[in-house]
Length: 121
Image (spheres, rainbow, N blue to C red):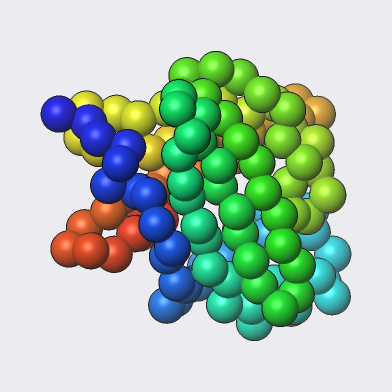
């Protein structure tokens, strides 16, 4: 059974393999890609009732967004995009964040395994 509570807490980045290529696909400029690929952000996920907040903190930049599972919202991404985003939780306990903007789409999937959160896409 899916349980978003498994995602609550502070998560420290250990690896960002392929992140620079991902940013390039998004159209992020080279300077920001270099800084972004060197950053080791913490992701803090907390809950207030049926609302969830995701805060990404690094020495480079901090961003946050709040959401209700399954409800679309406007997200201002850390790289400056304004997206229409929806976050869902699958039965396999995979948290999926779909961002849409300017006819484009990006999907970020996360899963907690053995006490660590992994991006699985």
